[in-house]
Amino acid sequence: MRTTVGLLAFVVVATATFPASASAQAVNPAGHWVGSMVRSGSILSVAFDFVQHGAAMSGTFSAVTQRALGIPFDYVELSDRILTFSLVGTIVLRGTVDGDTLAGSFTDHGAMGTFTLTRSVPIATPYRIETRSVY
Image (cartoon, rainbow, N blue to C red; front, side):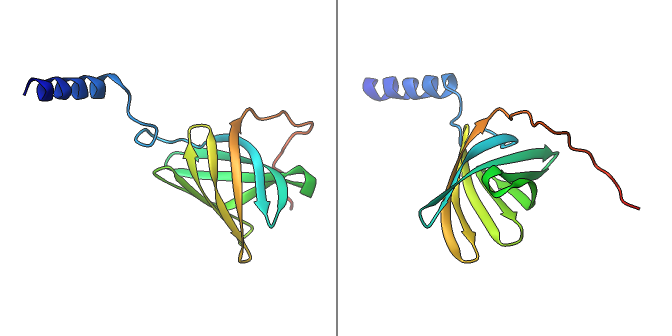
């Protein structure tokens, strides 16, 4: 009986002392992420940027070697720690946010691949982005 009470007291103190696990805490993938996408043995260096807009999210894709800079995602959805987003209507990515790592898989016209990203500090670009309207 004494052992059971001692164990119960330890569990109560440990639960009150240690913070909740990362999976139970709020996940915020907003920011700059860099890493790679791998499909059929080919590796593509990529950068993703996510922005939080209240409950909604948006984001962009960049791959310098493909001359793709700031391509907007079709949609970005976050459910618990699972981030799902789509690019150019054909590429669907689904990954798990775990601290400063985002990793998962994607499909592109039926072909499957994987991606691994790390949260990073954005690099200043040598250009300025401006919105212009055309009349």
